[in-house]
Image 1: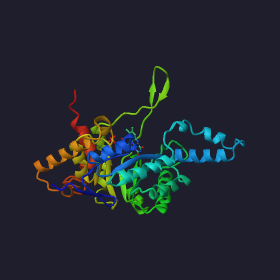
Image 2: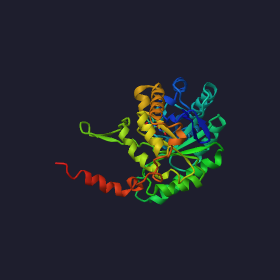
Image 3: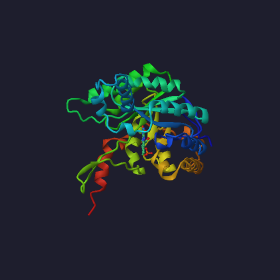
Image 4: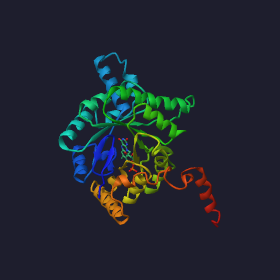
Length: 332
Ligand SMILES: Cc1cc2nc3c(=O)[nH]c(=O)nc-3n(C[C@H](O)[C@H](O)[C@H](O)COP(=O)(O)O)c2cc1C
């Protein structure tokens, strides 16, 4: 059974990659992930806010007494508590390169073009083999149009592309109005891969305390439908590699993503719940299913059920919507 796949130019032993999470924040758990068979590791993110905070702080101390930056610092709450400095992050890349043999993909997370994107070069110099650029922006400003938001994403990508020569994957939000077209623009802007999707964390309202509270819930398998549709639509139409992120808990979930066109499947929630060893369970499950269904390689099944390949492409589009609603008409 040939489980190899390529992603960002790396030949990987199989298509189950741990995505950015607390498990990829420490060298010990990174080692455990490699021991469990991870074919590449995406490190947790270094955040734009963290970088800006640190440089403001440096400036503040160099001008100590002037108070000129005290106010600016106060706009970035709670970052003092954030464990990792930029130097710690670069050290993690160096340690990981020394300790493990699979590709390391550092992650830079931000939303606005600016000097922070220059950190991509330091990540490359520290030894990162690739870069995941997570552009996380909540478009809450009524004055900014969708086109402007997308221009901003492209500007961030351009700034990073000019800074590094390692491959870049853009981790995207699903909230893009014309994703197929935007994917082509990201490709033209130098993206080598697209990660679909970033999972937005939605705040909740506490009815007892009447406070807005952060609410981090791990994913479920059925959340994979949105990326599944978009990977099926993009497969064969963009040159970028496609990584599926969200809802990979079982081998069947991973197989479905590969079938619609993913080059790799990424997983976090399942590994946080079941531990790094779950990578092996997923890979074994993929192998068993492929044997039972007489597939010889991951390449053979990749994209075999993309929108272009299925007999009824409308299943991935609007026509399916009407059929589904029709099917529930008889509900009492
Ligand atoms: C606790 C936690 C921390 C995460 N940290 C990051 C991060 O630093 N950078 C990032 O791009 N994604 C981060 N993610 C998102 C995951 O990489 C992944 O895209 C998301 O959880 C969906 O995949 P899943 O359904 O397998 O969990 C985090 C997710 C969780 C649950």
